[in-house]
Image (tube, rainbow, N blue to C red; front, side, top):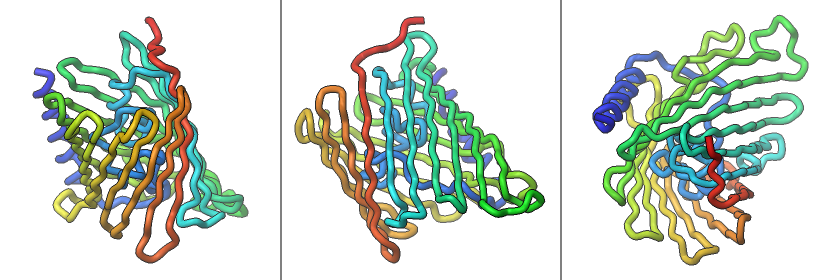
Length: 292
């Protein structure tokens, strides 16, 4: 029954996004977390740590440790495109896991900020469901009070599902901004998309992943394809690589872990713009699941 419910949710999301109009706006994807970005953003079907807040909140249901993470990068190496975020997840034994994050992008002239309240829990039979409630705000310096933007906020809703199919294969799906939020009087929706991902654990220390990120004008057009992989070479060192299209980009990175501390780095190429470097620092506080 649980697996049938998962498939119903999956089909509904595909149908819903095939019928909505084209939508554009601020808050486009910028890439959250050096670990997922080292895998080219093919993380929807992995989603097993604090990064699940951004890539598939259903994955919070598999998190068993208290975890906090901070990340910083400059998009395409430009100072005025500084992007940073902070996030944390708290697992519980009876009501799933809860996440909270804050991110900010831009400079003094143009700034986006986003706060996410996240929840993920098990539905039984290795199926998980997740929900994000987002507060998104934008500020343009010098814009008049009567301008279309200037200063405005919107609420967004993301939903996600995750299923373990056997011991090695995982399937995930996430829909962003399902409610079609708009900033102020703007006639365009904020960025909406649906992401479908799979991951396969070839051996215990190796994960491969594949994502399809579908444009929201229609699921019948060509999706963006991302593929990545992660190999745990030792208890303290992990190596990652990935590739994506639209445009074609190659990524790589590594993770270092020492006790409760973890550092992740990702490199992202670009065919026309500057290459990008992304850094994440996180704390994992062991198996500290909260009793209810």
